[in-house]
Length: 197
Image (cartoon, rainbow, N blue to C red; front, side, top):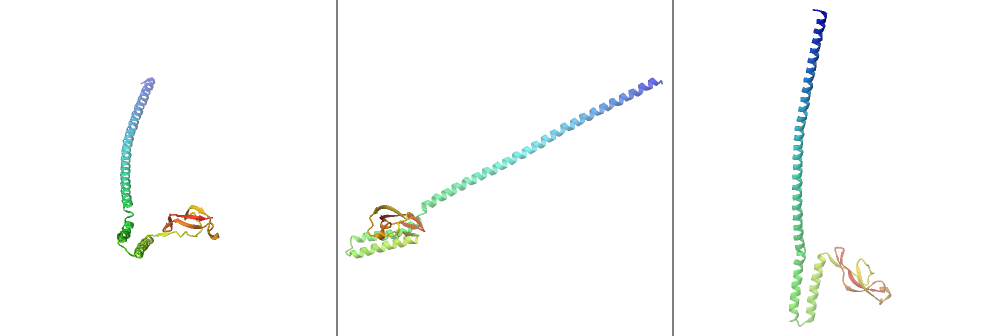
């Protein structure tokens, strides 16, 4: 073999080896592409799974919210119903305790026509009044003492002013037109008074 032939053989071998290397590198590249192509598909599948769990979480949270809203609505309706029943029967205790006083008044009215002793009628009415006053005291109702006291806008309501019959009564309550009352130290009705000037 001549040197030329040997050179061409070596060149052919080199060409073949470079071609084989090129083919191999192309194969590797395509395999890498396939692997890369597979990876996104797996990621997409994992994302879909994550989305499903997010959807499941959302549905679970939404379900809890709906249940909580329903429970609150039931609670609101129940308390409203209880409050209405309470307001209907709130004064029941007081009214039941007033009924004996009402009975006493009816008996007194029934006996007035046949009564010959006016003092006995007065005494009976005084007893009923005292009974009723005691009942109010038990419930926490007290009378506001206003006559000849300093005028106080927190307790009294001035109806009119008149000249004071005495120097000591100037700026004080001369007369009480309508009594005022406390309920457990809270004014429930102001005394309507006349003030001396």
